[in-house]
Length: 40
Image (tube, rainbow, N blue to C red; front, side):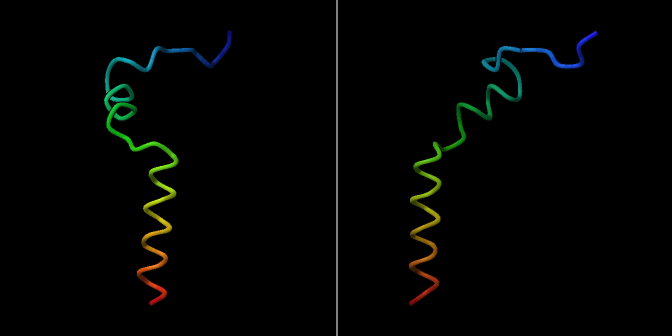
């Protein structure tokens, strides 16, 4: 028996997290902003 299951992420906790979590690009931009603020 396979221990891994493919579950749609559009429902439940994971679905809510995926909808509200910023994209990777936005997260990188924010980290770069923080880095600039801390280096000055």
